[in-house]
Length: 345
Ligand code: BGC
Ligand code: CA
Image (cartoon, rainbow, N blue to C red; front, side, top):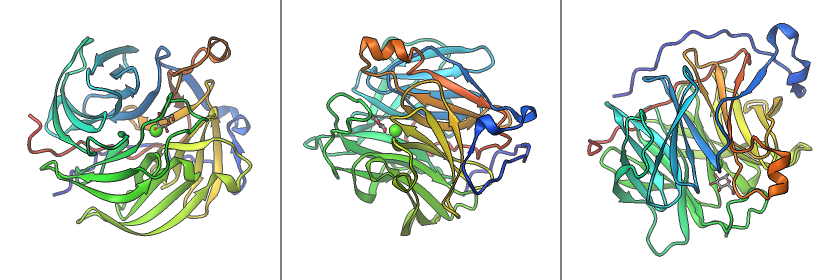
């Protein structure tokens, strides 16, 4: 059975444009604001809005933290995971004190209600995603409307710095993990498995393998959790933009919000027309991922990377690694889902 979609109301004001529209052109009444809402951390990634608790989860990959922002108070709590890089975290259906995360090559179950900092959070390994012999780790992931967890992998990188992209090609895959924790490779090979999004009808899946510079679309069979008919719906190299597409989310109109890693902006793309609709500047280098949140799902939370910066770079971009909240975009997102897992209690 499908989970019941979260009901929400949202203003439908949307600037439509065929040509790129930059936020600075937006009339005053709809002036977009970008606000830093956390301290600066390392490689902040994987924002996931939990509409049940109205909190934002995200990870700090190489510092091995799961973090939770309470936007009502501005407080961030953190849980250290003693198990290698923490690539992504998702909520679990039926519980608010358990989370499932990708860590190293594994899928882990973390016991944390997010209320307090945990210096060494309790967790157990649910299953290994990649063979122990492979030089890979888990990366971005997301839960589909049916509650399956889609988790991607990538080759280990030398220093986690965007722009270098020095990791070995085509060692990663995108896995579908079902409620009995069986994982199936659904897309392979990929180099850096990143952004994932499904349209509201749940019949199209959008996907980013970052070094391709492209956003791909697939027909999605939601009963089976399978995809077919790959086509390219956006290619950064066909614009005059630099940077690499990273995390991604979809809005209620079916447009895609894409973090451009190696650059300081998020782009809005219409996958049907392939038009670049908008660009939102974020005051930090290396934007990593995006998720809609807030009571109306109309705030775009944006993670950035402050990992491995030289002292000089850090001076130039003091807020790198922070999470930012973008408001007044005049659009709202699609609710996220919790992982349905039989053995996650
Ligand atoms: C990946 C991260 C990676 C970073 C820097 C991101 O796209 O998702 O896991 O460490 O790029 O290469
Ligand atoms: Ca990413």
